[in-house]
Image 1 (cartoon, helix red, strand yellow):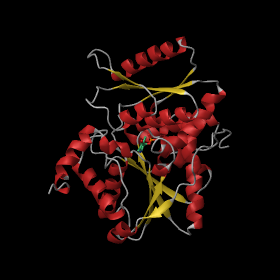
Image 2 (cartoon, protein in one colour; image 1 turned 90 degrees about the horizontal axis):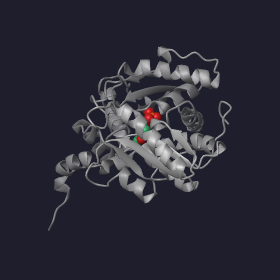
Image 3 (cartoon, helix red, strand yellow; image 1 turned 30 degrees about the vertical axis):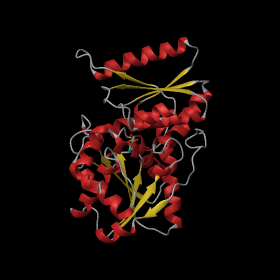
Length: 342
Ligand SMILES: *Cc1c(COP(=O)(O)O)cnc(C)c1O
């Protein structure tokens, strides 16, 4: 029970925190990974911690179906489908996105787990948001006519309840750090739809945990990350009736490493991904964790992360992303020399 809310308990937690010995030595810092990519359903990822709370709420409301939204390659959608499969619920994903021409990566996993994906096509008249809203209404009606009770989960599971999974994770990390006798730890996470960062930030502040949190944005937000975060926190505060002020000083966020767009192929990010694979045999993804790790490498170079600093990067999963066409074709070119036909 966190902030008065209950959750399902389906995760193999605590997930391990592992030291990256080879990279730590090369960078002159102590770099660790919190392995939330090793969570146990649907190939894992950070959305599962949010779904422990969201699906509990859905079941409490008598829902029989989970409906969510995202891009065609949404990791959150895939994991919503995974939890639905496990709990005998129906699930579907709505994405305003063209068909990528192949059923790969998350789309393939969605199909394997029995979760349909509705790909809404741009009509050149409406905005994506308008098309999405209309599709939500249409698909909900369609399934309700078949007798389902639909529970809607917003993009990334990042609403008020969705922060609690990472509130808990902040406490989990603080406990592990204590057992490891690590001091003055900087925790670094990716910032996408913001639920993960917000959960960690509120958890750290409200529970007075000895962790410093840095969020690395992976896509630009219209009025910047701070504006987005402060508005999101106002909703959280109201919803949970929290007696806790959070200001800009409580948030450490950077947009310096977002490379200008969401899920774009970036050479520097792929280089970071190869570096991690070759030094530590850990696979990152090109959309989220690869950008974050590339950001950490830059921060070390720029002296923003100091020599000897203890840094834990949250590995939020997303590995299917390496199999999406627009990333894969770039990697196939760069790695062509690794296939040697003799
Ligand atoms: C969704 C996602 C994130 C970002 O988490 P938010 O809570 O949306 O900020 C990071 N990494 C991966 C792999 C994700 O799927």
